[in-house]
Amino acid sequence: MSSILALRTGFAKALERWYTSNKRQFFWRKTRNPYEIWLAEVLLQRTRADLVERELPQIMERFPDVHSLARAPIHEIEDSIKRLGLIHRSMYIKKGAEYVTSAYRGVFPKTVDELLSIPSIGNYVANAITAFVYNQKTPIVDVNVVRLLTRVFNIKSNRKRPHTDPIFYNFLLGIDTDYDYKILLYAILDLASTVCTKIPKCKNCPLRGFCLAHQKDHMV
Image (spheres, rainbow, N blue to C red):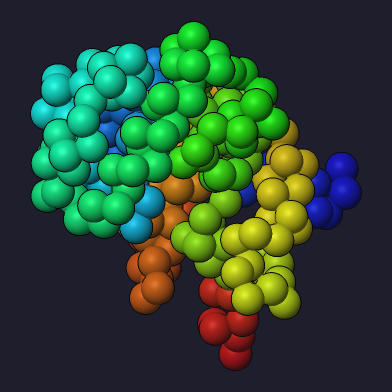
């Protein structure tokens, strides 16, 4: 086994062991309903997960499916998400719901290319839906994931928005796991959000044994 392959395998196994005891319990992780995951992922953008966890049940009760959201007046959608901030999301949430009901008869498609045709859906959300709903191997990359991969593997990007660089997506795509692939993605997201933060909590990190940034900081 090559050294990089062994490192990726060790990375996956360490993450999955850590996740079994440290996973965050969000209710949108317990559903395979693409509408619920789509709405959660859109609202999670630039919004703390605990706030979405608090507000989303009431939003789902008000708009239980994509058809009810598509039919809703914009002011009702604005009212339902106002406590989350970024109220401008109401318009593209509504446009997205309308598009799914008209173009796909209310059924979210199963491919990234088709999902990207829907207003409100970019690469991150499209990959999240295909991974978490349809069990496809589509890595998801945000700024937190970039920070973790940069530290652990010294992967770097020259782009102003590194999370758009395919180098991170392709690296995650090359990781094989004996577990459900979405579990690996959840583990990466959770570790990046709770441990490998801007000020890292290295003592609590299951990856510190082979994290290149940690090793560099502790060289004698």
